Image 1: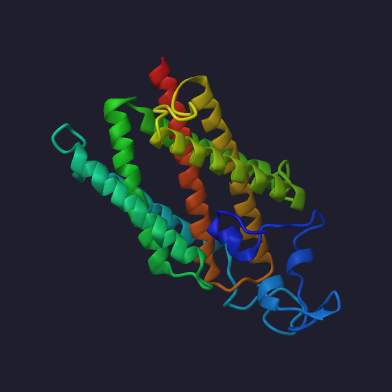
Image 2: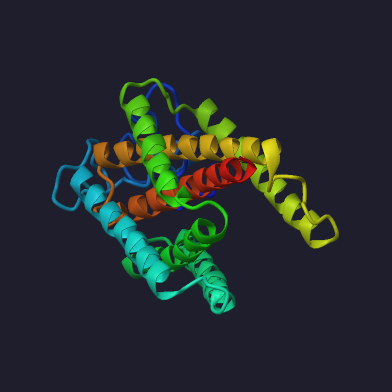
Amino acid sequence: MRTSNPFLSRWGAARDAAGPADVYARRPVGAAVGGRPADDHLTNPYAPGADTSPRTDRTAVTMDDVIVRTGTTLGTVALTAVLSWLLLPVDEANIGRSYGIAVGAALVAFVLSMIQAFRRTPSPALILGYAAFEGVFLGVLSSTISTYIAPGVVVQAVLGTFAVSASVLVAYRMRWIRVTQRFTGFVAAAATGFLLLLVADLLFSAFGAGNGLGFHSGGLGILFGVIGILLGAAFLALDFRQVEDAVAYGAPREEAWLAAFGLTTTLVWIYLEVLRVLTLFNSDN
């Protein structure tokens, strides 16, 4: 099953409730599945050959690898966000230029993320480039909201993102959240519906209905943002499961960059939705 998350789309998000070994269990290259020769690169991305046990050599990814790469990627986002906040003023004389740079950075970040999503192997340059341009967009957007709409909301949004992430991590580690095939299918369906509503909202806004479907203000906007946060939390649980499986079943070490990419895109999603909810809540009060 392919998802909008690059890490999930690379390795496949579907899981069986019996455990990750059902998906990543070792078997010889070319072993038959359902009476037909199987392509290990599609059905078992970690298969190194005829080895039937998890890899423990130095080329296999470790949790430390994932943590370091994720910290590097998120650090790049944070650094460029702070620099863009400081160097791209959003006062009346410069807001047009800053806004244009932010939109351009968002488009470049999107293009880089799509290129990486369709690559067979992770590219640190693409991933860090995505993080840098995404940080520029987030910095200008956050500065604008903090200056003109809801002062102080950015700090609240950052703390809210940490709170959501920590809560999901605790719930996942305690197995209160069980990432099964049914869970994955539900999240994928819900995310598809959410994105379709976003597209419809943009179209309505562009062709006559200035407020779109009403997701930009009031109780409906807050509700839509809360749904977005819940979806982001669900994708974060999927990310954690993918990282856990990759480490347990010997993914190549370079895939730590892909894990970092997936976690970063999910955390950016959560931050934007938390920022949306807090902005609407503060502006209505």
